[in-house]
Image (cartoon, helix red, strand yellow):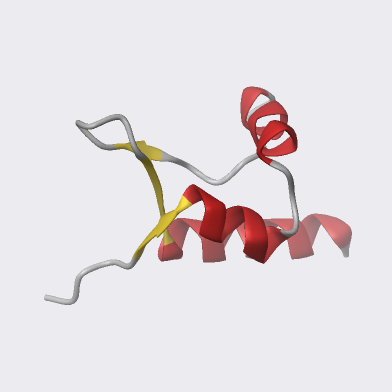
Length: 62
């Protein structure tokens, strides 16, 4: 079984061109990709969740 690629928040922010503050504002409105918090407190976002989020953004822009 293939492992899902897990991205660090700075990698995601760079890809989507957004500041950390803007990302967390969007997350508070329920509009950001799903995050997963690790036991050590670090945050990860799966590549699959980010790709699905991109698709939703494209659909709502169309």
